[in-house]
Amino acid sequence: MTHQLVHKLTESGIFHSPYLRHSSITNDFSSMGDFMRYILAEKHPDSKLTEIKTGRNITYSHLLAVASQVSIRLLEVGVEERSSLHIVAENGFDWLVILIASYLGGYVIGASSPFSPWPEFSRNITTQCATILVMTRDMFEKFQSEIDHPYLSKLIIIDAVGDETDFGIEVTIKNLPPSQTPNYDQEELDDVCEFLFSSGTTGVPKAVKITHKMIIRSCERNSLEGSLGYTTKSKFMLTNALSHVGGQIFGFLIPAFHGVNFVVGSNPGFIGQLEIIEKYKITHINPSPANLNCWAKYDQLENRDLSSLEYILVGSACPNFDLIDTFIQRSGLKSTVKLRNTYGATETASCTFCQNEFIESDFRSIGIAAPGVSFKVIDPQNEFKVITEPNFEGELLINLGFDNRLLYFNDPVKSRNALSSDGFYKTGDLVKLDERFQVYLSGRISEIIKYCGSTVSPALLEQIVMESDLVVDCAVIGKPDEMFVELPTACVVLSEKGKLFEEREIRKMLLDHVAGHVQEQRRIQEVFIVKYIPRNPNEKIMRGVLVKQISAEKIN
Image (tube, rainbow, N blue to C red):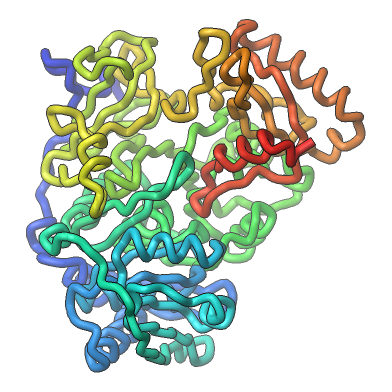
């Protein structure tokens, strides 16, 4: 352990990873199909997966064999290499089979959350310019009366069959009459493996182009000793949505590269996840900050046996570290569990920062830049003004070097706007540095509230509100206001204790609590009690939905 600078600073204000470049495997594989064969058949054929819903257990090699059969079947019915497939499925073996079969067949894929309505699927199909829709049987039966899109030429239905050990897939093909040909430049698909959609928290989700080498490099970057702690004895709870970067790359592909044993299923809620950890003796979890907050306030937490946990991998949004510490203390894990704060983005193909036990760093920071990653912090109003001094807030920009192909499909304007003039990806995240050049996430530029000439951070106010035992969940938004532009407004879900009070009492207690922590012009001004906080499948708050609801006076 040392107290040296965490990152290396150049004269131009660019910070570099402290890690030396290690031997690269990226150039050993020409495609994700080759890479999956290597992982599932050569590297870890005997590692296992357990499906929560059915209780099925299969090995990596069995998963590859089933996926290979599906890939051959798709080729037989005319699904050609480079075809654009859109996937709709709940987490499970069938989803993983579709994913791996698509890699093997050389298809370009995208996916939607199975909990979305058909109009969202349709919009994503349009954005991706997909011509083939792949659905599991249960999804087809749910949406069959709504399936209609001018681009679609085929509907492929995937049906899981077999018992606990004899797992297989049946494939049904339905030809559709497309009425329109999608318009895009074929060269845009060069080396593209898949499209991962951005979170959509501030607007229509964008189709992020992810190349084969970006995914392989991401797996390699996150294989450092002392980082995520994966071994072939690890058990990973995979309940994050596989349709998003957090579930697919960080939740499945990176752990699979290390041969972990998976427990796979759809998110059963925060109590259901605790039950899974207990039942399957999970060692690694990647919960959302919202779930961690709920666990910390769960009145039956001490009655849960979570002693199998070894690593808690935190990411996705600004975590409330005080509540995380409360969860660790109450669950009796203080001396045994390792907390890893991670940072990444859809556009960077998952994790680009992570803590490492061999480089001393504050667990509240986003960790250490991965090998090959450089970054800088700029004034959000002037990209040519670089910030290197501690405690000054600025926007984080990342350069991945080898993988610097951060573009949105069929959208040249947003693609240009996503990069700085020197090719760094503009994350939109606000950060601060400390004296050792550690990086601390403080919020999103797009979420900053403008009130009385001041800028207000929702993330900070949410953490303060969540300290109260009157609430179990919270989102702070800017309510449109003619006089003040935006009013910082807390939308809260009450705890059982909170439900004992009148609304006016709740409002006063929360306003007084926040007033004791921040200066007057940065406090919340209104409080609304809601039944739940709307979140996307990646557990990010859908602030725009709350703003619309409050503006339309649907919440009272």
